[in-house]
Length: 354
Image (cartoon, rainbow, N blue to C red; front, side, top):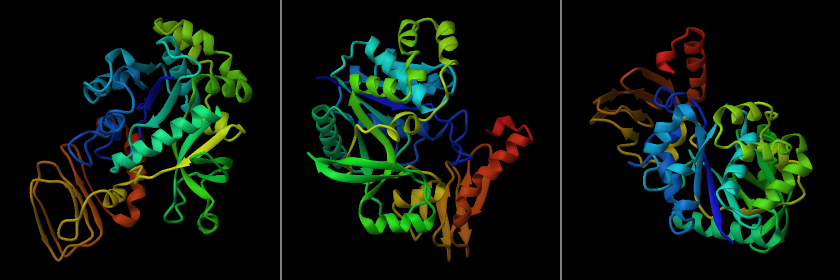
């Protein structure tokens, strides 16, 4: 049995604007340490997955970024290009076809992972990954790695676990993002974990579950595989596939889902405020990048200003972001409102800032 990993790196999230943009989204940024988030993701598979069995899927317009951020960590020929954005299920189906064409067999494990999350505990990740691979292979299921929740987050989907199975559990159900009351109730039961979008299965199991639960998608599988090297034809086939998430297409419907609980920290960096959880504070503030600071009676602030000196006096709990194109200052509690700025720029056709 071989292990392949598929890193999904085609997202265009702008919740960390102005540094994260559609032309350079957060997976290509160095926000925690000197390495990009994509590079850190690939590093986590050192000693776990051979370089020639690591794959990245992204879009053509991110080709240079993907190549630059994955040097010596993945073979250039193992970068798969999605013709157009059609959500995660078609993206994964295309990737499975490419990985099978590259030599993967039905019994080989394919692990699907996001490219833009922060995990500091590499040892814990590799332990959880090893357990998930074992459980998936032995039980012939799709095994997801769930994050034990430590507060009632309303921005994540939840997974309800059932009976123990090997080093993990059977999965009872997937639950959409809850309101605060439901999230609080979930935590009290001790039976729910956050859905972090990390899962794996034998290649053959993935194909069987696509066929069983999304046959209208799986009908295009052989055509995808046959046209991997024909860009125009591949795009024609790909554009016929329904736009669905992998959760909707398979995970919420399948009875062949198992789970291993994460033994590591996890953060999806959904806002500037989230960086407080992964960057140590200095003088009571979170300084991600700057060319020096003067902080007087200033606490709880988040600062990102590469090559700039930042001075703050008598201000608290602000997000202060500056790069060569824009400056943004917003209260931490309103950090999710960055999307309003992005929408304003789209409405006013300020493409150079997006």
